Amino acid sequence: MVLTISAPLRLAPRPRVEGRLQPYLFLLPALVLVALISFLPLAFAVLQSFFRSEYLNLGRFVGTENYLDFLYGRGGAGFLWNSLVYCAGTVAVALPLGFLLALVLNQDLPFRGPLRTLLILPWLVSNLVGALLWGWLGNPQYSPVIHSLRQLGLAVPDMVTDKHAAMTAVVLCNAWASYPLVMVLVLAALQTVPRELLESAEIDGASGWQRFRFVTFPMVSNTTLVCLVLTTLHAFKNVEIILLMTGGGPVGGTETMAIRVFQEGFQFFRMGVASSGAIVVFLMNVLFTLAFIQVLRTEGGA
Amino acid sequence: MNAYRRLGAPSLPLRAAQWLLLAVALAFALGPILWGLSTSLKTPEEINALPPTWIPHEITFANYAEAVFSARFLRHVLNTVLVVAACLAISLWVSAHAAYAAARFRFRGKNLILILMWTTIMIPGVAVIVPLYLASVWTGLYDTLWALILVYSAWLVPTLIWLLRGFVSGIPVELEEAARIDGCSRLSAFYRITLPLLRPGLLAGSVLVFTLVWNEFLIGYSLVLSNESRLVQVGIYFFITEVGIKWGPLTAAAIGAILPILIAYAFLQRAFIQGLSAGAVKG
Image 1 (cartoon, rainbow over the protein chains, first blue to last red):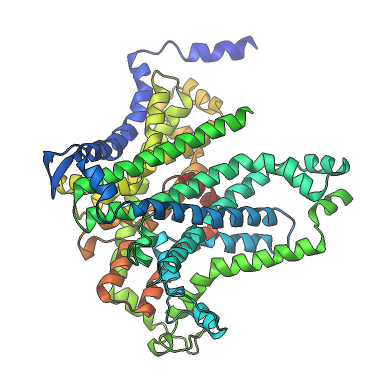
Image 2: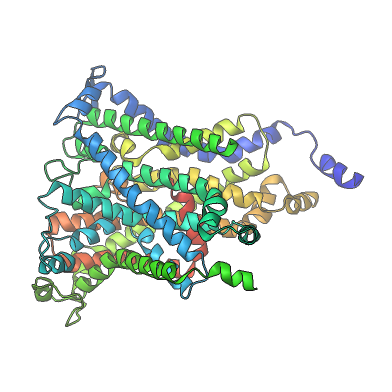
């Protein structure tokens, strides 16, 4: 005992100066890279958001004009509503779907492995390619699905001209890309639920629903909350899917906040306005994450 | 044994509902991919045929040939591979050192530094494309692969530190101590003992690097102008806007872009799940 305790002490004499600097040297390259490429641009975006931009250069100081322009200019803040619908719609589809699939796949099931692999596939596909494939499947003229539905006498609205159809299409595509993460994370959490606990609950006379409600669910509820946040954040900042499928249209019907920032910067080249929008997106991201951490803390404490 | 079976076997209606759910989910998951695959194998006449056919009558690979040659797909794949290789080298090297410091040392300001780095994960890509675009123009890196390599590496580092720190903590510290008794310095103990044992973590990290770079669009679109420097996803995007919509070659390119990830996933499922779950925070 004495030996094992004193041995490390003798091995690590009080570190000299270079010894005390050592951890910082290990961290330095990472720190420099992140500071230069993540913090500096963010700081510049904050600065730029208060100035009128003349293409690449800063013009005069304009206070909050860019922010007001972003929020109230060009058809108002309809994009706030669109962002909300896009996020809520994605969560409403992806979360229950991923959760239920995890429950099903957690049992002894024939073909469980192959089923899991096939259901994970959309996760591996990039958002851009996903949007391309969904756009083609939702093509009003050539889609076999829409064609079959029309054969059945259903009036299927056209996602190129109909706002609601366009929103439904982009939400479906994003939910398609998002549900596998929920499935994988919840499945991992379910596997930590001890079997003995479920068995003893059963011996005590708990029904299947009660076992789920009072044993399984409390043990995966935190993971489900994490999934809710990840899915929402992904939808909130996502550009590719809407850009490719609808371009924000028709008549701004799918124009979310993230798409507006992208358009201000790279289609209208109004960098100051784009930066102010970017700061708003970032702040909302941070607020949402902090609120979530708070909730997670109180849940864990209770 | 009996109790086990009863727990795992739900009632008949519940079981039917489960298989129904699985069937619907499979159709949802695979529908768009299979329809794209089917289109990519069709002749132009059949693609435009009404009513649309689910399965091609006559299979052709002409669309794949056209996607590869006319859209410079191979050039974009080569660019992407180069960027992936550079990002792997830079981000893994940088993150492994930082993760080692985070897991093995106690020092002043450690938590502050780590938390600051991890907050950058919260910065959405769309929030920094404008300043990054300006910075790349000013530094002369605009329209070069270096701009992409640096940005992707910086984006990956915080997540990789998070991922690798867990793996470093899992390696018994006694192994390093033994090496240091034998006269190794801290750094050489890290290179000789810890780094080789970190292989599963580095593999999961590599998956994260590969999938991010292969699938990323926003930065690749905003920091690169010329066709010669484009990566795969941006190449596909411009294929749509420049060539005009030719669904045959387009779906062929889409399937071609999915294929490498699919093959890698088939071999490295475990590393994929670890890496992608860690990277889920950054989109």
